[in-house]
Image 1 (cartoon, rainbow, N blue to C red):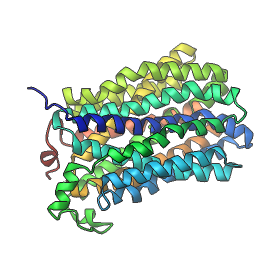
Image 2 (image 1 turned 30 degrees about the vertical axis):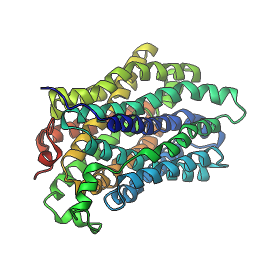
Image 3 (image 1 turned 180 degrees about the horizontal axis):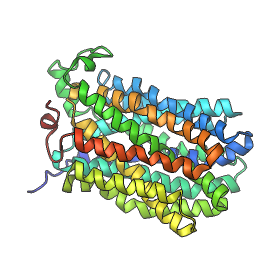
Image 4 (image 1 turned 60 degrees about the vertical axis):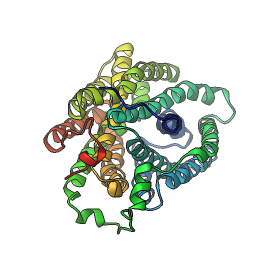
Amino acid sequence: MSKTPLSTYQKKLFVFLSVATFFEGYDFIALTQVLPEVRAAMSLSKAEVGFLVAFINVGTILAFVLVRLADRWGRRRVLTLTIAGYTLSTFATGIAPGPLSFALFQFLARIFLIAEWATTMVIAAEEYPAERRGMVLGVIQGFSGLGSIVCAGVAPFLMDHTAYGWRSVYFVGILPLVILAFARRSLRESRRFTEQVAAGAMKQLSLFHIWRTPYRRRLLQLSAIWGLTYVCTQNAVMFWKGFAIESRGFTPQQVALSITIAAVTSMPLVFYSGKLLDQIGRKPGAVVIFAAGVLGVVGSYGLHDRWALTAALAFAIFGVSGVLPVLNAFTTELFPTELRGSAFAWSNNLLGRIGYVAGPAIVGVAATDFGWGPAVQVTAIGPIIAVILILLWLPETGSKELEETAAV
């Protein structure tokens, strides 16, 4: 079966959304890279670091407000707002004088960053044909991994060879976003959203409207799956640098090299993950990706040889990135256009993020007594349960139009 060719606008949109998601990966690894330096500079304990990350991650929950507005204000307007907000918050992080201001600015950055990412995925789902949707979601998410590689490569150099140290990582990170702020001018509103507005379907719905619809069961199911997944994936790379230095005796330079090699090695798999979902289906693809991620997390915090750890870390990074196209696909495909933004906001940004926020705090406390390795390894039970629930609860949505997959 021949695939529907992409229009000129769809190709340009593909590039725009990919560049936007690039910085989700950059920022994720940025915090990982600077965390030991920030901890030392600000005299923080392991438990305090865990709570610091947990507080920052609360911002991902509050992104709920902005993501939900995408069903009211439109996808384009929300995406524009979040790009501007993230740019300013990232710059402010670089000039933060202490741990409280650092946490506050990163907290604000997370609100805008995650809202940007979620809105990007909604636009991608609505603007591309069914037989290419998984590929598009996967490649756009893959650029998040590419952002991780760039940050892992440049962060050690910036911290060691600039007068601003870890702060320079955030100064550099805002430059391409300034370019994006101008590039947004060519962005159109989502076709499906525009059609729904014209039909009068996008009316001002209350905050809890979706819970009074037949979709409330799907919402609860996806919320549980997101939360269980985040319990592990949020910690998988976040604390690896501290683990490698403290438990395996790596130098910061060796850690940077291992993260870079692991991230580069994982990239072909990350970019292929979306196409895999189109080829074999969402549920079989979920099994492959979740299993690789679980094995990677257990190995990257349990092995001793440096290169074996690096190889396991590559699978962990693939799992952390690869689960997102899977869950993005299900979350955007299982709800109608007028509820899609609200569904993503509730299931991912509000309820699902409970695991995202609680995970680092729990790991930080556990690491005080047991070390980073065992504390992170035990979180792998979350994705194992999540993929079982995907198989039991969710319908197969691969290669189907949104109007079909959204039907209850």
